[in-house]
Length: 387
Image 1 (spheres, rainbow, N blue to C red):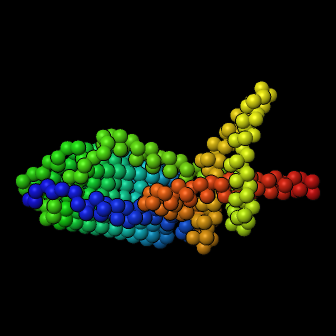
Image 2: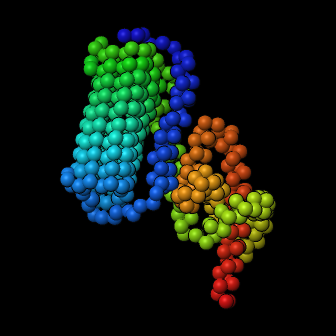
Image 3: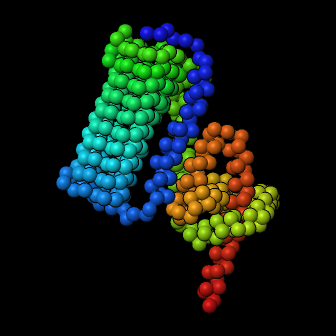
């Protein structure tokens, strides 16, 4: 077994892998939304019997779901629990508040979030999940990418194991590298790594003498306590998910204003930027003047609230317009917004300065779009009422 070595090119390699990881996560949301629209099955319990064959993508919202048959396409599901003992020829995208058990075959990738994920069957591509407990006793033919408390790899992984866990135990075969940030990592006697063990942790890895590592064992230094890093990661993820949910909600609740705002941003960028700059400069001045008078304080509070909402969701029209251009109009406003938001998140993660500059531009541009769009929507409604 190789001795632990000093960090070298592996730190850079971790960052070079980030685009692949983030692309997988982005595809988990973009592909279902931007693809061909399908009816969502909304039911208490979804069951696909062993003899049944579904020849198209399946979209499900259910309290529990069981797939014993065959789905020739993708499965996109929000559920309490999911059991797959049959076959899914495409990808599975799942959001489950309980467990996800896969004893059958997923020919594509399994991506999503759940309380626990247990794979004893086969995943043909990647396993990319966020879960409290992740157990792999079966086979993943490409990468395992995870974020969670405890992960155990007892089966076979074709390529790499990547992610962040409190505790990682490897007792099976990994075709290439294990590259993780952890509190504890253990290689059991049956573990066999075809590449390196690269881990960022405060504690030294527990490596049994019977474990085989063909490459190097490299412990990277930590800059902050593991628990703090996990909390920051979760805050970042939840904040981004909140932006996605809030953006989609605004596009739905304010359909008239949102549609007009996106059109203004795309067709009259100069007008949107000018109005947005006026809001950014004049808004705080108006609020300050209102605060100076007792009568104006309630209006000032409303103004502060509106500015906060603009800070959070002012970029939505710009993101939506860019996404629609990227998708060629497929997926509508929702698909365009989700696609561009994810691409933007990847760009901001890889180049923080670029992300900050794009945010400021999109915020000013989009805020102007919201103001002009809301005015146009109001004018149209007034005209219709008078007509």
